[in-house]
Length: 213
Image (cartoon, rainbow, N blue to C red):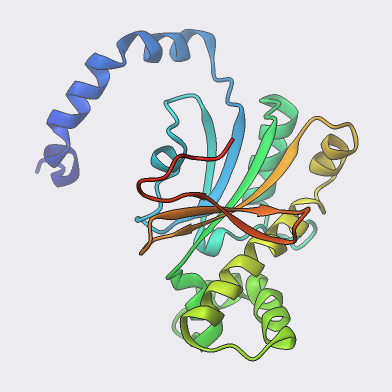
């Protein structure tokens, strides 16, 4: 039986392999040299390459539910292994945490998950719990505004967790890497980044606008 996904994508895949033949040959024979590592949510609506305009070889990508980076030493090693490879072997210059609005992982954490039927999800999203706690401790927000605040706080939380990894800490101390926190607004098609000097997320891109430098 033919693979239905491959069948549907055949034409696009053929065009891609033909149009990018030179680039793909170079990557196959010379290896990868990505400039940045992108840690984003598994959500199908958030596509790192489309958000960044990246081509093959530009990004080293990890996608996890709710763009979570478990703190070092928790026993969750998948993200840590990718971080170590990106820092120590690929020598990426940028580590990006990208969250997004309407995040199912954040909603699941916020509203609760049945441990009996979804134990993996229930356990995983607890790594985002401090973001919810911080938001609710600061102000009384409801609805979309509260959800967005938790999404943004979760990006900051995961940036903190990144720094618990020895490889990341050393790279930061030696000024070999920069950390970036982004939030993609699905409905508004806006990309915001965290400006540490101002202490909040700043609009970087919106439809019809020019990206800031």
